[in-house]
Length: 208
Image 1 (cartoon, rainbow, N blue to C red):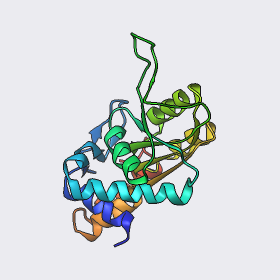
Image 2 (image 1 turned 120 degrees about the vertical axis):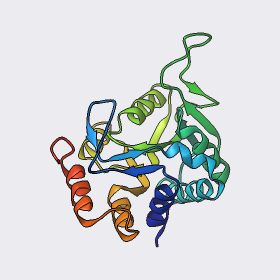
Image 3 (image 1 turned 90 degrees about the horizontal axis):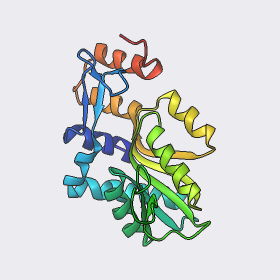
């Protein structure tokens, strides 16, 4: 297996990803989804979290070699950002979901110098909404955001559109297509379920 397949297998093994095409989950937005992903579980598995940190560090070395600061998105991206920053021997900051309502009211924690080149780390990219807000917050406080790197992407068309609108690149270690492929190879889903899962990615509003 390549790294993307290995990470997908890791997520399935620890239950960070659950596939249920016949009894879909309901997201907070009301969207019916055949997949539930909780990558926060990965922090409890040293071998897996190390593989993730080294994998994302390699992406940053290749795609964003001029990176000066690693930023974690609150809250799920923070621990991974810390391990990645350590791997790359770079400074770490993190971005709050909203500015503090006391003190200086900042939204960035840690030392950020104006125009420093920053890569944001998140655990999961669905539509990109939350991490895009973090990108905007970092830019507002003077960061030169090179891109976003995450563990897993649902590969929804809306995420590609949303990142394009703010002119920001994004990469992930693994993605929905790879996960479905690995799940089928491991007999975690059958052919009919695989078809349903593929239909959801193409049209999440009309797939059942």
